[in-house]
Length: 556
Image (cartoon, rainbow, N blue to C red; front, side, top):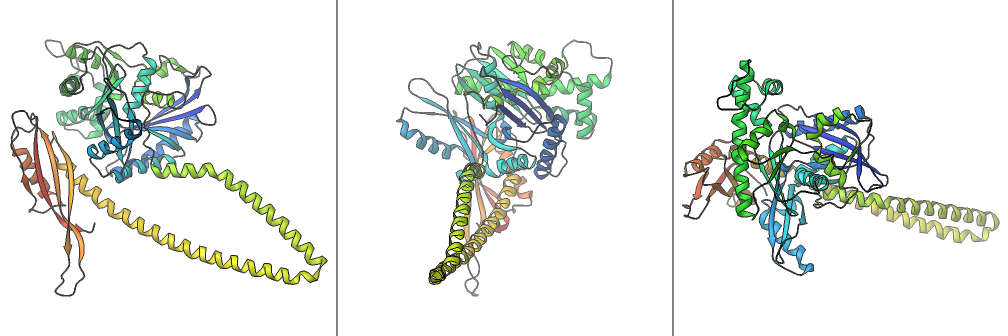
């Protein structure tokens, strides 16, 4: 816990921020004393615009609710985190980390030095260990934590939203039996969290609130903002079949648009359930708990209950969590579907939770470690000042009492001269260190080129495809015959991908993907498919390799 019993929690979603302040109870639980919810209404400038809105929104929420700055437990959306569940064979405890590191290197689709990652041992049967791996691009989490710091908070722990929600459910639903499915419907994505006998499986599907807004945009030919406003005013899930529609034609068309998207979501949920049962050895869900901002669209629970033939209820993260009397029951009831993650984050500070991931960037960990040593440095400095004061007094007294010690004083002056020379040398070393720091900052600028290229690839990749490897090819550049200096550049990049056969039945989508890459500003028409084997009868994915030829080669 923190030095006090005050706990701040912050959940950073795609389009909203949820902030809560808890206090620890003597019983070991927590009590909610304040909470605030803000919308991130950023424009078209992308991630930099979003980070700016995060800073201003945090400051506004703290000012409105009177929340003081301090250490904060925060979470990032599951969509921005790469998670994978692997099984380990029985091994000695001193070898577990090495094997987990090897599995992380095999499964995480980025170089390990470019990500912040953590793992959780979940346990298993017959001597096996189930391990959850979580990784996020270092640049993404560093930008996010820097924004939270600029907003006035001190990130102390970074969790993942689905695991925070899992911890909240485990704490509030102790009597849960069999398989339970949590459906967290957000703005950009829907997190599916399977709970069964202490085990967990997380799937993220790209069908959520924004998909409904986009369907309304197409139906009514509106802007995103106007379609969002129409969704908030008229949205509900149409009953389908021979039901009489509402008197309002607008509401009727909106409800049918909502049902269209919900039908897609139902198909994705069914696909995830089948994956969980076939690949993870799980059971069919006996109960579904709904949560998330989009889950409150009227009749969402009825629709899923009718389609999945499973009892559906809304998640209540306050069954075992106290709420201050200063917060009205109506206010909590109105926002309860948005507060599951912050409850799970608050529990991380007072209890031992089933899953305890921490994606805090290394630079913040180092800064906190240094901060803990500051009192010792201060005490040493005070002692040094006192010592110097006593020594100076002694020299002064000795100088006034005995001129015969002049030679000793001169020796002291020479010693101080040597100290000055050491200080000059130290200053020279400091300049050298600063030059190295400037060099490293220049390297950081080169990394942005990789991010632009990766964004360009992901912007054109069709639905149902994903990349499993990206290998740059380094070549020599420069004309040796004319005396030009040779240097290495990256001109070609080889990517390896996979595609679900139910999404990509033939090779045409892969050729379309190649054509989109050729049309992008990053690659030339020489970009081509180099390997595309026919899938076997037992395969469920199609494999391919494409060599990307860069428009503008750059140095590694």
